[in-house]
Length: 367
Image (cartoon, rainbow, N blue to C red; front, side):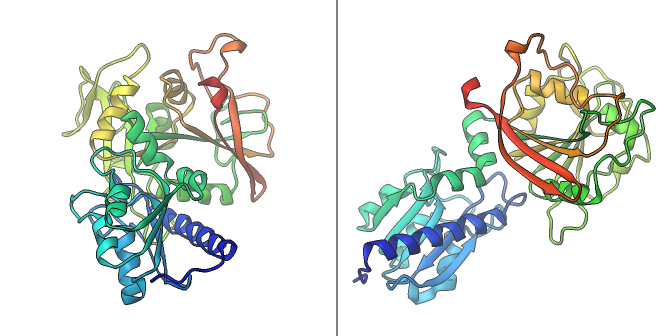
């Protein structure tokens, strides 16, 4: 029998354990797609942490399995705190609901219900086996941590973060085109963290011509390199010897269906009014297992994504610099009047070195 603790301490212990599970889940960002990031903490019958784990990579053991292995026999009669409803299907690994049952877990608390129709139903399986199940603990925190996967399940396309660096007056380069470096070394290091947490990094032909970017993750041990994607409509920006063509990370060049290219393998997409069809690009990336995209392109590509309604989060690094002239961070996004402006809710402001990093998402009032 599971020892009953006073209600308040038990609730506090479970909240602490779920908070830890959310932090553990974040360790899987960038390496689990097309699967979600999940964390799990196991408490024994007395409320002591005896095991923890997280989903480390697609095809590998799920978070619950790692935590149960760490807990061993101490899991029997205990409680499992999981950030996502335990899965109920057999894929490359077995169902986590069954693993929890076999381990003798007496209670399961999960934060977010599984919206994937092929995996949902774990909670009911657990209840049928006589396990006490509770849903919704720290749901908001867990949902934020898994927002890319949840968005992809809901919309059928990857979650897109548009990242840019600009001066306080909104310029991404000087009038002569020079832009290195507007943001600080600390901000540039933070961008590598963002890259490591996503599945693909996307830039356009303008960025290719101006910067010859490498786009691989540097300075983060054990990072899984994201897919490097160049939107090169006319197949003219990626020249032989471009840094993006090395073997540091996988690379995909998206070109128009009728473009002529020297590259042996490209992704051919329909043309749009301006450039390539953005929804078609995102569909193609989703089909390749990409669930999160970091858009690092310039103002033209950013405008095309916004016009397509395909930006879920904006991260701007604002440097304490003034230029007064030069290209703005965002070009034409199909917005012609202030009443049509895309309103954002700021979710975080952080000082990084001398810069200010602002994170914002489209306002719920817009939907």
